[in-house]
Length: 249
Image (cartoon, rainbow, N blue to C red; front, side):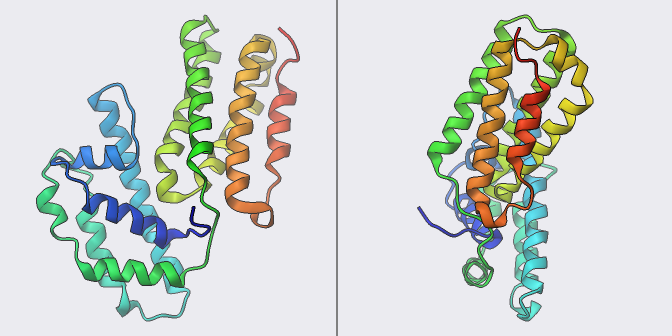
């Protein structure tokens, strides 16, 4: 596995994957690239559009980072803007991809290659096994709440957490591990806000499944960012979440 990744490397991989994708419809291209697994066409399109918004944000962040390197904007700005316009289609995502991808040029690929070397490493890539383990724990949690009767308000909060983690997994290849930081902060805030609900209505089994998911999210994030780059000790957040949960049924 590569030991370096940054905004340009992530974008470069995505653009190459899109260019080499043989799907005819735009939404199918992104569904494949971002490993989107949704139960119906509407939710798939919503997930794709959210990923495309994140992709647009990452392009903007990438340009900001390049601006700070001191290299002339003339080397990359115009071509990268054109590339954004070719890739990010928020209206008409059921349109034709094959004609659109022909607008992606060798020059744009070379610029991304160049910028990949210029920008510093911002995290360590997460291996596929860790991602798959998180997905497995998430599936187990989702299956549990679908097959067990939980209080409506608690069920709603947990489903919201599951959705946020799924969205983070879809967007990881775009934004990197920061998406898991956002999930952790969100989970912590939700548990604090709904302390009484979690304390009074959460049994041991669901607590354990929730804790495993949160711990895995934390582990994935800290692995990617490395000890030197973690500015907040997320162990404390996860411990706080666990401490807020009941110790027994």
